[in-house]
Length: 147
Image (cartoon, rainbow, N blue to C red; front, top):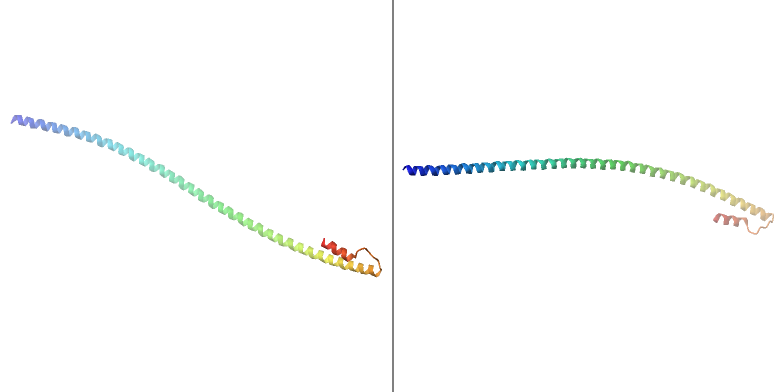
């Protein structure tokens, strides 16, 4: 029985030794996996921080673009209002100039009418005095007016 006891104790010693060895191996693998997990976690946090920086930068750029567009719209609106004001002033100036030209035209037309009447009187006086010219003065004035 002593031999069987020695064999059983030897077998148990071998089994316990193998279990301790296996436990040590598993413990090393767990430590290695923990290291890899920590590295993966660190890299993930680094990527998340990089994405947050890009997002912040993107938000800032988007805000700047929105501000620039708004400023451009305000500037264009002011320029458009200035342009409308200039066009209105030009329209007023054209209207005033047209009125002046129309007045001058009316004045010149009245002067031409008076000159034609005076020429008719001169022609009548010349006919009365029997002064002959190569062409009637009224016809000359008509040609001059058409020219």
